[in-house]
Length: 229
Length: 229
DNA sequence: TGCCTGTCGATTGGATCCAATCTAACAATC
DNA sequence: GATTGTTAGATTGGATCCAATCGACAGGCA
Image (cartoon, rainbow over all chains, first blue to last red; front, side):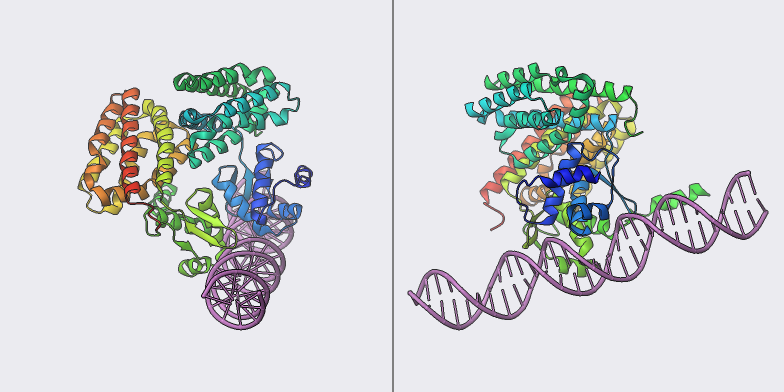
């Protein structure tokens, strides 16, 4: 585990004003990318040593991650990275299916041609991306590009958070089924419907996209049993 | 004997296992009920003295509340209770309008007659409740009673969180317009549509209910200007 | 043998202490 | 008189220290 962390530490990234901010961002990234796999115990002392800070910023960062449902706290036992279960995946998709069409509807009237072009570039980039671990970020950026003009910061933040949470499942998808299941055709259909300002069609495509991804993942997760064991 | 013990344990209120849990729950309640009005600075030393603990559980609780968008942290300046702005209210309603119909749709097929009767009792209780500060909790319980069988714990938790956040706005409603704006007729219509298992009708009523509350509140907040000043 | 109990090490929760930073007031300079 | 530099106080961020709790294991007892 410390090896995976060391790699993340090497990257510089943005300048954080407090150690807590820095630790929180790094840990979230590590969890969402799978560098810290589900079920990993998060020992405070160990993390403190890895980040070269004391245990306190670690604790505060873990508290924030707990509120984001990324880690699970048990009093006097410690924090662990939340598991990936079929129930949890279904929950995540239900939340996305509620939030994303709403975000799209709010955003659609204010999207510009520049936004559409950006989204198009991202879809194309997904076709030519060879590194599976980067597909999640691209997928996220594509979706968020379409929601960006919603003008409701908290709705957008929630959407982004749960979209990022889905990265963990996307890794399963690609590993299990290959790129065909990225459903690039659906991404392009969604983009075209949005460009035509057809809110009903766009949200219908989006809902079908999410429902299909959920069904595929459910089938896969239930077939292989609890991934924890 | 173990059954008798279990009963005793259930009777007592929530037993907080750590000081942080306790402080977090108390602070959240204080913010949502308006006991700590928007904009209040949250001095750590002061809170520590009030709760008779050290500053550390205060800090961890504040971190969790920050992740729930209830307080705003600024490095080296401190935490304040987030303001109530028209934008924020619109944001909250947009999130509720996305989450609650979804929760209702998932829950509706599994609701029992006992659930409907409970919801009915809560609506009736709202008619006879004389204490304005308790209306928020009743309103929340009514809505959540209808969503309770959704079987998606994280979706439900998110819904509950944002429904609770709306308590702050409900206080404005009642103070400004009186009980007529509780829209008990809409609550009853929603209950009847749910009882008839008519998901489309029920979600339509719910969406209209939320949209109307939002419109009313927007009008009120914008007329009186920024509540901060 | 099997179960209960008590002790020990590991780990977390909480308290106290120190350093870094911000705010504000005041003095000096232009 | 306005602006800027400085300094003191307040407040937070982070480190260190202590106490409470949990898990494992060994030993006593039926």
